[in-house]
Image 1 (cartoon, one colour):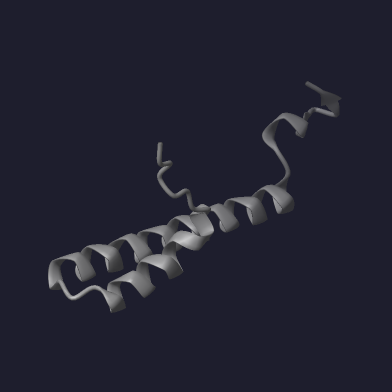
Image 2: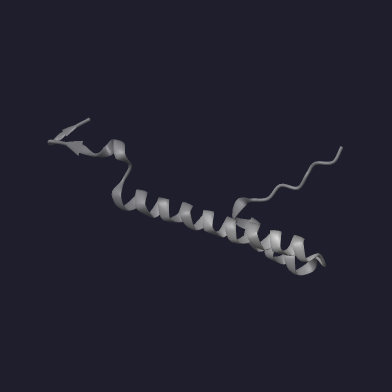
Length: 69
């Protein structure tokens, strides 16, 4: 039985770009470029959310009127 290859999401962008250069089909190359750009945008969003959580903290740690919730 063969197992399909698994990839880490942060590796998907560079792998899709490499595959788009090596394939000889214009439609497939365009689709792979979309996958690469989309995965890079999602990774940027994840990084931004981590930064915002580090700066502002999770919402359940906020205090109201000096009392913890």
